[in-house]
Amino acid sequence: QPNAMGGREAGGLRDLLPGYRAVTVAEDRAFMERHWGLKSGQIAAEPGLSALEQVEAMRSGDLKFWWVVATNPLVSMPDLNALREGMTRCPFVVVSEAYATSETLELANLVLPAAQWSERTGAMTNSERRVTLCDGFRNPPGEAKADWEVFAELGRRLGDAEQFAYTASSEVFDEFVATTRGRVCDYSGLSHVLLRQHGAQQWPYRLGSKPGASSCTLYADRLFPTASGRARFVVDEPAELPELLSAEFPLFLNTGRVEDQWHTI
Image (cartoon, rainbow, N blue to C red; front, side, top):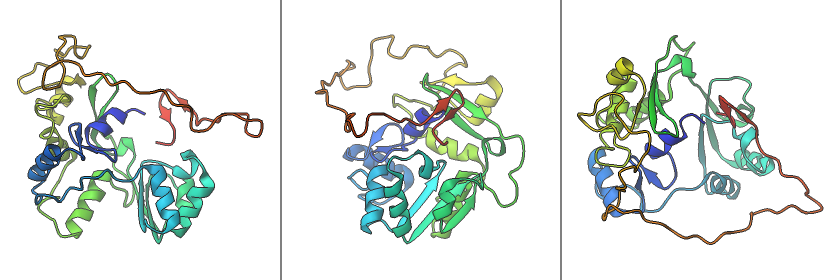
């Protein structure tokens, strides 16, 4: 799971916006609306559906379009029978995929050929906040494209050519970097050029930072990203596992992982 941190920083969860902002916070929504040139109130104040909720929404008929990117849910999701039922009922399922053997392709209405890691350029962030530029070293075959190219093309075809006028992944990265300035994950001094010249860097990497100078330990200065600068602790009541072992179901089954392979990404 080499880019889980980077995905969260970019707002890749149902309740997040870029720069570790929350969709439930009015100030965060307003910032992103200004940044993206949207009208006030265009970003929903409620989180989207979780992956499991999406499955149930497909089964009930409430979700009528599902786009799968960078995963193979018909292998890695729990309750595959429920997922298969939901995908079968969903009127239109799109799957972006690099491998013709992916099980999820079986139920796709449209397959978009995706470029692999070796065929595209982009940045990844690992769990120690280290941002690495991964340069592609060969062209994608046939009509395969990097995910950002597909999303940008969709945005243009939906009528917003100016907002999606990206010509390189470095421009997408720069647009994201602008949302992190002053945030805990401050990337404002980073670019593809700097990462290519100096190698991987840790955030926070503010404007004017020197390559390699970031601390390996976050909050070593005892300053935290809160109004008071002090840490905020939350006490949560421990809960039981959602499903406990029983005589009928005596085993736990978990998906496999090795050093460079996690789930199905």
